[in-house]
Amino acid sequence: MIDLKRIRAEPDLVKAGCAKKRIECDVDRILELDEGFRGLAPKIDELRSRQKQAGKEIPKASDERRAELLGEQKHIKTELKSLEAEMASIQEELQPLLLTVPNLPAAEVPDGADDNDNVELKTWGTPRVFGFTPRDHVDLGEAQGWLDVETAARIAGSRNYITMGELARLEHAVLRFALDMMIERDFSPAIVPVLVRPEPLWGTGYFPGGGDQIYQTDDRDDLYLVGTAEVPLTSIHAEKIMDVKDLPIKLVAQSTCYRREAGTYGKDTRGLYRVHQFQKVEQVVIDVADEAKSTKHHAAILQNAEDLLQAFELPYRVVNVCGGDLGAPQVQKFDVETWMPSREGYGETHSASKFHEYQARRLKMRYRDKEGKVHFCHTLNNTVAASSRILIALMENHQLEDGRIAVPEALRCYMGGAETIGKVLD
RNA sequence: GGAGAGGUGGCAGAGUGGCUUAAUGCGCCAGAUUGCUAAUCUGGUGACCCCUUCGGGGGUCCGGGGGUUCAAAUCCCCCCUUCUCCGCCA
Image 1: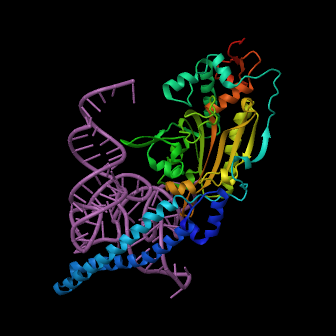
Image 2 (image 1 turned 135 degrees about the vertical axis):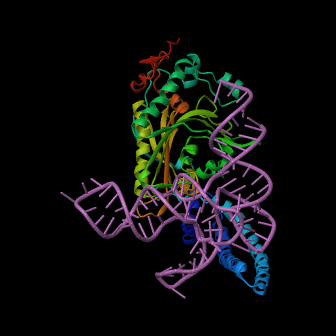
Image 3 (image 1 turned 60 degrees about the horizontal axis):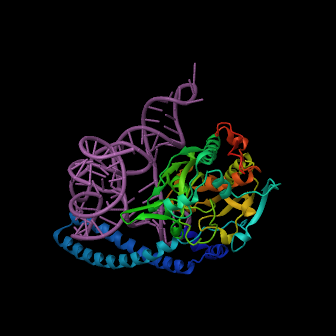
């Protein structure tokens, strides 16, 4: 959500932001409703003021005066009722509309319609040239007896996976490495619910708009399975006014993530790339409303992801996500894409988002500065490691000709010291 | 799941229809004072919305929503939530 006052003051800027993001939003209707609201508000306030005044006088008044006042009060009451009804109908239309206004993209966000227009900022490492025909992660996993997609589908439907044995151990290793690395970098670990009420989803910007991708439990409970720990983590301090001394708050959590992947039929159907359930370690930063600080945090959480990939010896690139590929809540987003030989290209593994106060305003998450003034916080988040996609990269990039997988040094301490996993395949 | 008790400002906590402008304490801020960062005293200290001639004026908010009333923190209904006991349970 952005400030209604800002929409009022700079409607053209807001419209330009919507256009850049390719998001439709009826800014003019919002302005119309706002005008109606502001016409009505003073009238209602004045009537209430008179009502309050009379309320104080009545107990002390003489009998005639009291009768006179009571008559007046009846009048005020009916008038108020109709004005309040009018006000309610305005709010009923205005509030949901406000929740659809996207955050304004930064000037540094490239123009563009979709991910083809994202701009590459840097690359690290060189995609490996294989001296043999490399296998993809599904072939490798199945041949090693580590990966069972068919059984997963029988148990849980399509787009699911089961890892077993050394691959399951590698998955745990990745997650533990990610968590430990972030704890070392002063992020506070948390274990959070992944089944949440609607408010955190509205607050973080997944509702409205992202509802298609979210599993709802059923009609008995108003509960939803989150697609990322960002949702509960960012919501921890909702509805609070924190002290500036307590900021920044840096959080890290591993969670299971659930995604419906509606509208992706036939896309990335093979293997682990697009699945309904996976494990992810997520980093969240909450700090003061300061653009320079937000930008610094943004760079830092991106660096955290890069450092992990470098430790895993995986080639990657960083892209500046263009307007049309940016979600409604983000000011700017850097995606990290890791080299995946079977795709003969880079695949998205991390997504570093900067929100300014968009989420905090929706979550009512504020802080008091040194002067005692209250402001909405700034929030940011990024993936540290999403297990399934990282596994693709690890298996495919580090495979040996004989079908074993080399374990990057950084992960060996979580793998009982193993330098490779798997048996020699025919 | 059953029974009971709660939810009031940053925190604790009083308040059972109009004298509430939400007491009081703690915390916080400012000033005074003492050879010090401690103590004491004095004063100040909520969020949000609308209007403004920028001095200020008005309104809303006591978990959330609805209702009764001229008037609701206070009475009624629904929901959320916390705690205690019982039941079930990893």
